[in-house]
Image 1 (spheres, rainbow, N blue to C red):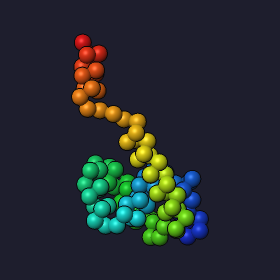
Image 2: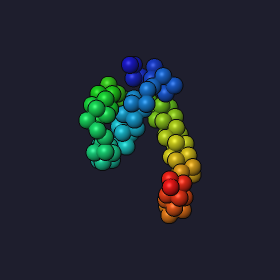
Image 3: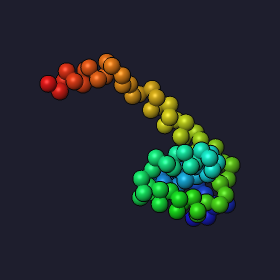
Image 4: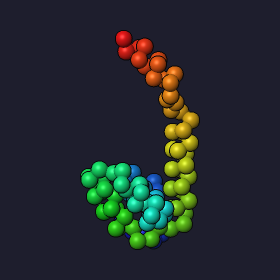
Length: 93
């Protein structure tokens, strides 16, 4: 993958996007997130991180927008808590 002007977010896999995001977050934050990956995921992501020595500013901006949109959707569309647990339990019996 070319990392200068040729890196395009539309052509990146999910693993490549995660690798780029982890690089953007820095070593400490990346390490905290990577602790939650299984062995296969860790190998895939670190392999992609090694292929991305530089991430152009436009790709960084687009990645942040995409992850921000996913985070907003996740926090607004998934509700748990006591009502969810109660309703799920009632429907299961």
